[in-house]
Length: 303
Image (tube, rainbow, N blue to C red; front, side):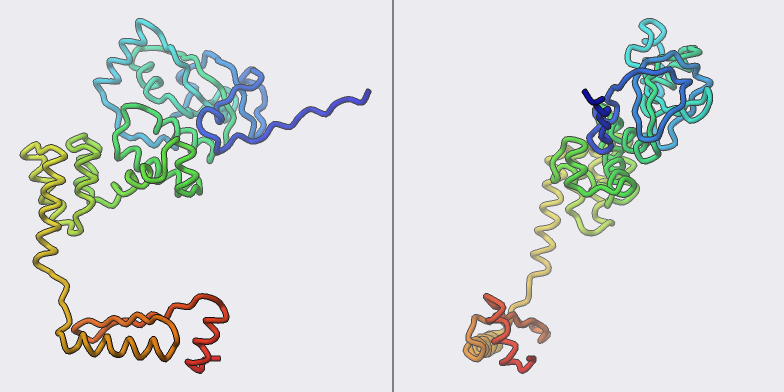
């Protein structure tokens, strides 16, 4: 009986955090690490041997929450191991679990339990971002920034991004739109001065100055999301009333309609002719097939 060839494992990149961190046979972290292979196993690793993750998407950590976590670690220990990759002999780099890593330092630990994985830079980034997004206490701006980095740096499309993080495209787009707000409002989202609901309402204001005016009112008066939405609606409706679309005078309108009928008769199809009081406009000549298009082009003497 012929020996069976070992089945080659498929790459798990892009299948979500669970797949990226999927367990495979455990080996000691001192063994050589092959590219594109993810290894499992929990090891006690010295904190001094672990570098922080350069791809860590989260910049701000709540100091009080870190101290609380440190106290918990002193009593309970680290319940969930951190995840690292080996980069050199007795040198590791954090993939996920920076809060546990930092809190362990505060708690006075010298070593921590860790999963050892192998990952290239893109895998590192994707793991860190997805792990970060899945945290419950992440603010809306941090989620938006993580989504943007996944799109830009991991070369994903919005549909693919939605699959990665388990969100539909509309939800993803709502977060990404937050990055179009001015820096002052983005900082307020980050610092939880306003909620995602407040921010989504402000996005619908075209003028940055007016966005900031409503934002300042919302913060100073502690307005609810519903009240901010009402302010934005009133502002937009007021702008429409002040800038009504100018209508053509009856004589000009009659001439346009008459010319539109002549064009429709000439081309043997419905023609749309639009013009504004400044005598700017457009003509649309629809066609139903390639032969119909060729017929119109012949009338225009283009072919």
